[in-house]
Length: 179
Image (cartoon, rainbow, N blue to C red; front, side):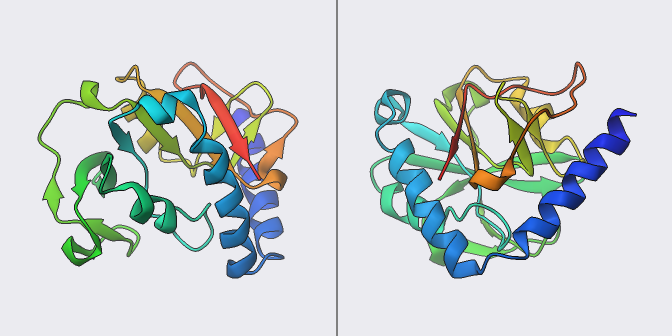
């Protein structure tokens, strides 16, 4: 029952995303990151985990490029059933990844996850109780359960739904930021 409801929400959001151009999503993403940049948790953070966005996600490229010289940025890379963390040192130090064809940093992150202060978390949908619906592989839930970092879910306003079905493995966000 939960799985079918999750699938239904994923399909609804996928259809809604088609009605917005990449440029529109990018503009709306700027507004999201303007809100993140004034959060005390972000201001105080030294090490940020974010993600290098795909075209259908909240666009992170400008945000990462703006901040990576003053804050340390860690980006995930899909490695089998897990996320492998890598350190962003600039676009010139990235290569196309094998899992989703997304560019990934070449340098492996060698510190413990405990050093990460703030995490920008993508999602297909979120609800008003800060529950998150991902793409269904549980990559983020497996990683997030092991960290005490501040978790900021990011999405466009139409990705907020009434209720995201959850189970004991789903990790709540500390905040969800939308345009």
